[in-house]
Length: 546
Image (tube, rainbow, N blue to C red):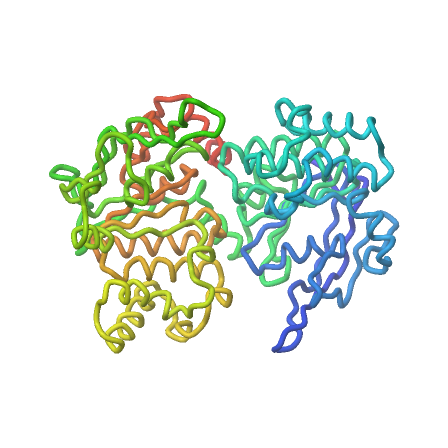
């Protein structure tokens, strides 16, 4: 393990303070931060949203928002003072001496420019290669980043790549000029756990090859501990704890660090859902609330005679008051299965029954009743909430659509629903952009509860949230299930999250259920190699085993 005190320190941050100008005056996002990173070392900066970790990363290459500024301290890239450098100098540093892998690959790549041309551009701008030599180097970089058939992929556009492949392209671009520092800001937070593992492995390998100092920004302490030599924990703009990764995990000193550890899905204790009255969860005998029998869904593919088989003869049941999870990688068919359950898609074969009735035959009032009984909560609450509406309007909309109550009744119902999901009443007049991600997801849950459903379908509803906010939403789910007797169909790519809340787990791959059972059974004695790969990819799993 690298000792930055004795090693070749590449990046040195001293007494850094960063402030943002707001309508309420200056707000300090980072205060008095000291940090050294040596060549070949990986330092993880960990904290929840608003802790200052991304602001710290943005300060390193001076890419703060227009209203942000460094008010004191220094950022030294060897002998270059980044805080005092002019813009011309910085343009020469960014991409050449400091590489950046951003969180969202679609915003980091030009959608109208071929992938290979974007890497060539990085090489040519910094004078590393040009012409045919640049193309050859770009193909080599794509290959080393794990892109199969890189020569053919060179000419494709970003939308033709999966999320994991786009992130590998960004890693190739960030390391193209062999930078001294690599900033990776939440580089895998939106990826499946198996893809996340592959991408992080590739990034570590390429960074080691060029000898870069790596600053990994993440909200997941378990992931940080697996991937970093040292861990730095930030809370409200300050570093509250730092040290070798194994020490921070095994002997956390600060209460905030202990909270992050307790909330990490790979390390957390299982949450037990119980029914109203505090009794045990209901038995699985009797007619289930939702049943899929031999469900099939096909999609036509341009240029192909055979359609794509997204769901392949799936059998699944959701008992009343229980949480049934579907887990699998992107493309496994889990979200399509959820859409069949919601009747947002029609099955091409098999049956989907709800409360004993085939949903394909529902019409008129019967279909309206089904819509009231089954409600969705999607992955991105910002995209699923109308930005023009206030929180009160968002939550009241289902009541208005189904003509439930008058205005006064709906106003009282909104207040009760917000209280039910632990949101303060004063948020009712705000719009989605004024809320945090966790608050927006609570609004989405309140809206889903407005019609008194029996089943809530949650499609990756916590995958984009910080671990602390994720823990709050999962606790809320369990509490609502206990109080209201809700059943959940919980879609996730992460077995660690599923383990916390599910009574039963279905593992899907290539549209088929490859195994199912109770979470502990799946985790301790998986029958399929594919399931074992999902388990091995859980951040923190190796720490628990060790």
